[in-house]
Each structure stands twice: as C-alpha cells, then as structure tokens.
Length: 395
Image (cartoon, rainbow, N blue to C red; front, side, top):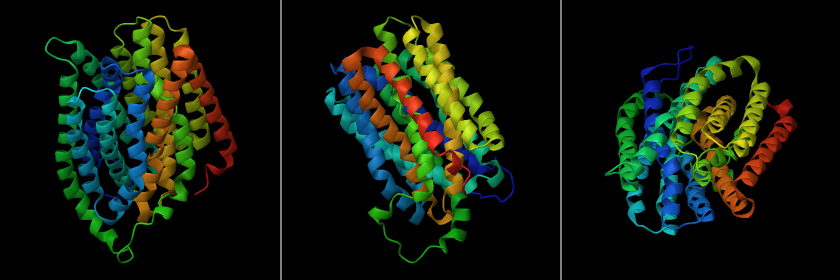
C-alpha cells in the first residue's frame, strides 16, 4: 500500500482497497434486511432475531485482537482476503432452515467480517495523508456505506420476485464476498511493494499477548464510535420489521435514501471535520442521529421514514468519519493492525449489544418504545462526548 508523504489520496492501491470494501459491504448490505425477515419466516421471534444478529457481532469482537496481530506480523491484505472468502463460504449454512441455527453461519461470517475490516483499516491507516485523514476516511467509509444504497432494496425485491426468494439473496451475497477476495489479490501485489520497508522495524519473533491486545491509543475514538453505532440496529434491521408491522410498503426506498445520503455526505463531511475539529463534528453527528430515531415513532407512512433515514445517515456519516480519522491519528505505525482492530471492534460490539437490547425492548414495550429508548441512548452518547471533549485534540 502506498503510504504517501504527499497529500495524494487516490493512488491505485487506495482505489483497489475501496473497491474491495464496496464488494464486502455489498455482501453485508444484502443481508441487512434479509436475515431478520428470514429468521421470522422460519418462526423466530424478534428476540431470536437479536440473538442471530448478536452472534455475528460476538465473533467479530472476540477474534479481532488476534486478527489484528496477524495483520501486523503476517499480511494485512492476506487477512483481508481470508475474511472475504470466509464470509462467502459460510453463507452455505444458511440453507439449513432452522431459525436458531442461523446463529452459526452468522457467527462464522462475523469472523470474516472482522478480518475484512481489520485488514482494510490497517491499510487505510498506512495510506491516508496526515493532513487529509478526515477526507480519506470519508472516501473510504463512503465506499463502504454506498453499498447500502441499492443492495438492501435489491434483496427485498429478490425475496418477493418470481423465482427469487431468500436463497437467491444468499447466493448473490456469497458471490460478492468471493469476488472481493479475488480482487484482493491485485491489492496484495501493491501492498507487498511497500511492506518490505516496514518489516525490519519489528522485533524478532513477536508473540501474541492477549493482555496487550487492546491498544490504549485508540480507546477514546473506539468509545465514541460505540456510542454512535449502538442504535444502528434500530435504524437498519429492526426498521424493516417495524415498517412491516405498521403496513408501510416499498421500504426498500428507505435504504436507497439513507445510503445515497451517506455516500454523498461522507467525503464532504470528512473534509469538514478536518476543518472544524473532532468535537463539533461528533456533536453534530449525535444530534442528527437522535433526531432521526425520535422521528420514527411519528411515522405513519414512507415519507417520514425517508426523512429519518437521511438524518441518521448524515449523523452516522460525520461521526464515523471523524472517529476513524481520530483513530488513524493516534495509531502507532508499528501496531496499525492491532490498533485498527481495537478501534473497529466498536462496530460489531455496538451492533451486537444494540441488537440484543433493541430486540428485548421490542418484546417488552413495542417498536415505538424501542425507538424512544434508542433516542435516549444517543443522548447518553452526547454526555460521553462532553466528558471527553478536552481529550479529543490530544495527539
């Protein structure tokens, strides 16, 4: 991966990295509305849906420290490619039609997801120009988010299409993951050109230490990212179930609106974050997410849901780009893999905890109560930001 001391962002390797992420995230975007519907189709309750989603998050969290170590000591691109192949192959187990068993392939997929993200973020940390970290992070995360523009809607269309169904979505999702792994081979050739220069900086025969697996340098951005994404399940998987419960049709447009907003906003908001600073950027992100979540219970049709999706996408875009830029700034150059593994663990940890919490609250208080609770979690995130405001600009 070209590390550029210059301000150039769009190298060939960076473009390949973004394309691999697009395909990997497209694989996941197809499954975002599909898995909750598939599990309920098999007879699972909302709580079982939460368990299946949490299984994906649990393995992604638990395996990231060792995957980060492998990325540092072996091959960042090799880790990334292995994750893509595992995501694709594991989907075959979804064809076993038992609601609770869906936790198994989703757990395996979580390991692959951890590798895709750990390897990808490590390569991004190596490539991003120091003075344009927010912008580079915005482009990178924008490519990831762009998968949510059409692919959730495609999944919903395929499920109901003649000759389609859940199996068609699973096969397409697997094909995209495998394509990302194959494309990673070209990325690997570029990465090897620059990897040799850094390998000599490593101590001989480094060993994995589980007690030193969490990189303290990125704890603050990880904490803030966790708070930003804790409510994401409410704005994605559970929103499909809520729309179905109140009779809103064509909910695929929600993902088109939110995904398009995220794609267009992330590079611009990342650049804005470089200019106005981490604190104001994150504060605006939390406020936008809270507004989006509180808007959902008031929705009786598609229009307000679309507005909610746009607001949540804007808030998550600026928040995610800002925390990623902050993590890149703080990551130690010789421990990029472990640092970015520690940072990126906030995504599945938040998704898993959020899925379990949202599923449990739906069973107790219904969907409106769940969205009100999610808004209060966003407000708690704002308090965490305020408590750490003075530490945001520390190098």
